[in-house]
Length: 140
Image 1 (cartoon, rainbow, N blue to C red):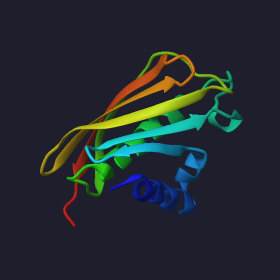
Image 2: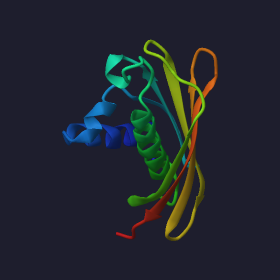
Image 3: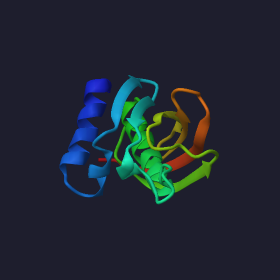
Image 4: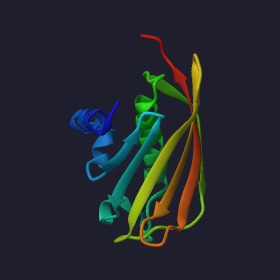
């Protein structure tokens, strides 16, 4: 799946009107058919906690969604549900920062996919978080 297709899936999620509307400012900037997806976000007030830093729950949501989109870009693509999601928070990102979210498909087997993600500040390349995500792939 190409960048247009992946961006279209993200837009459908946003348009659904549920929790995913918080992703409306996320921009997909690169998609590769090996199961890689790169997105960017300018951190605004709505993405921060009381301390003015990117909310940890929002980081986990970014990991969940962007890794899922990376799986759609993989030849094994398929709908899936999360089995496990692990995030390591390394450095705070602040309001006004631009961040990059890079997700890769490490392995996509018959029923499980393993994905990795890193989030970093675009200007300095400092890591904000690293993550791993395991998804069960459903057969349709």
